[in-house]
Amino acid sequence: MLSLTDRALAVCLAAWDLLPSLKRDAWLRAVGLERLGAKHGSYDPDTGVIVLNQALFQGETHQSYR
Image (cartoon, rainbow, N blue to C red; front, side, top):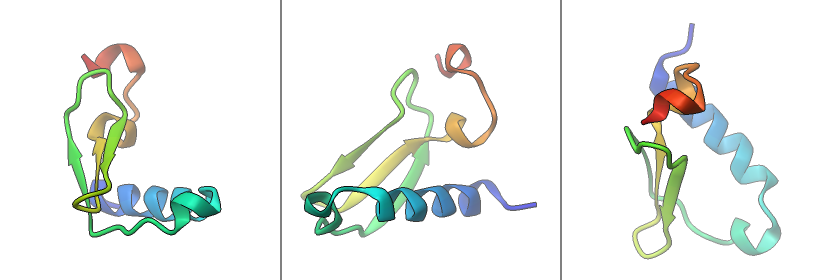
């Protein structure tokens, strides 16, 4: 079974490949996992950091993000 970090990395890599070409030119320095409440995640183009809600990778429902 993949760890939480490995699952997040696999999803990010797959999603990055599906982004439109404009976003594909963006750079990615790091991926972070945090509890973000109802927010799924964010990307900071200045730092190249994506932060995702860890609940997305734990099989939790949207109602339990809060």
